[in-house]
Image 1 (cartoon, rainbow, N blue to C red):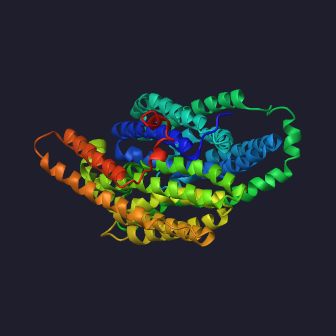
Image 2: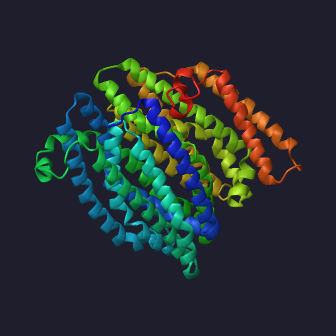
Image 3: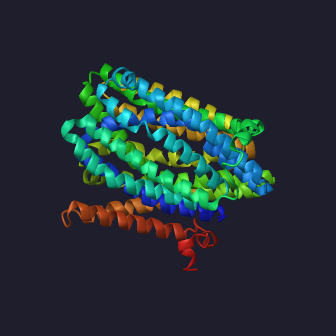
Amino acid sequence: MTKQTFLKGAAILIVAGLITRILGFINKIVVARIMGAEGVGLYMMAVPTLLLVITLTQLGLPVAISKLVAEADVEGDRSRIKRILVVSITVTAVLSIIFTASMILFAPIIASTLLTDARAFYPIIAISPIVPIVALSSVIRGYFQGLQNMKPTAYSQVIEQVVRISFVAALTTMFLPYGIEYAAAGAMASVVLGELASLIFMITMFKRRKTFRIRKQFFSSAKEGKDTLNDLMTIALPTTGSRLIGSLSLFFEPIVVAQSLAIAGVATVVATTQYGELAGYVIPMLLLPTFITYSLSVSLVPAISEAATVNNFQLIHHRLDQAFRFALLSGGISVVLLYVFAEPIMDLVYNAPNVASYLKIMAPFSMFLYLQGPLQATLQALNLAKSAMMNSLIGAFVKTAAIFILASRPELGIMGAALAIVIGFLLVTLLHFATLVKTISFTLHMRDFIKIITAMAISGGAGSFVWDSLAYSYPLLWQTIISILFTSIVYGILVLVMKLIHPNELRKIPIVKKWF
């Protein structure tokens, strides 16, 4: 079994994440161009329901599997690893049947009553088969991640996006003549096909790499897995709580936004369009860099669990320092680009320059969002999942209340919802950090933080200068590309000059290693 170091594993996931984000971004552009803001709004209204059901089905097991498999692997206990998988597959199979059936049964009520748009019924039904597919796939991913082998996860992510993007244009175009709701359902069907292809690949990799027979004495292993189930639930239930809170928050978000905008006097179709612009255009743009922090988070759970098993607290602090620094570095350039070039980016990508105002408001605070993933992963690896859950609960409650208060004000409208979302992820990140500091006395290196802020300010100023210099000399597309490239190069040079990335860290990245 191939095992990678923390940075190498994170690098593999980052490369795969970059590819999938680019493909996913193209997918969103295609969907937006074909269906428009109203169709994207219907599509996005079904997504929170899907995430809620998947969260209930997975029951937080992927993180628990990764952590327990990492601990069992250190001890060389292969029989325990098999029990972990058998119990996890049994639990997710039962839950998949229950919640998929419930999703289909309650789809009319969710669409017409809660989402206030009966047309959302069709994308909800179209996406329902994905639940058991994602549930089984996540169990296998947790197994490989626990063994610190990130390649199967990376390959499966790319496969999923390639298959999805291969079908999305054809399906949405095919169903569009029947109505915008059918086009949204077609887009959801492409997601199901992508996940199915990913699952087939994961099963193939598992069969090739496994060191034991999973079907041999499957039911006896399940019956004998009471202690294993308890170990899994100790980690999984608080993790589920955190994700359930997040999923419930996303589930109620379009409902609260729709009701609040109705109070503010906004018509239903207009409210759906505005929510589509915020949730379908702006939020995905802010989430683009999170493939880096997600990769760091996935690698952090087994790495920190392994270090905690042998009580190596120095290594824990070292891994956290690396994760935080890379999260801040990736978030820094993202904030600069999204803030300075908000209008041309939204104009070129979505043909919606008017939405840039939302992006400029939210971008500076998104740095807190990029730190949230590594912080939560660390808390889960250190058996502090309950604390993470409470922090998420507080943040979700404050965000939902803020949406209702701010979005219902006629002078703010959908901008109030944007501000409320910012308040939510800012609060959760600060609470996570406070919990971590209290537990292991971890502190950020302020010198590095100041260096990153300096690099952001200089590169942002340079990019703005180049943008103004190129005005009226180039078409908007080339003006934007040249300005973004120049800004990124300046930022990269400053990062290297300020030694924010150490040479020994670069050598651990497979692509860069050849040049040292």
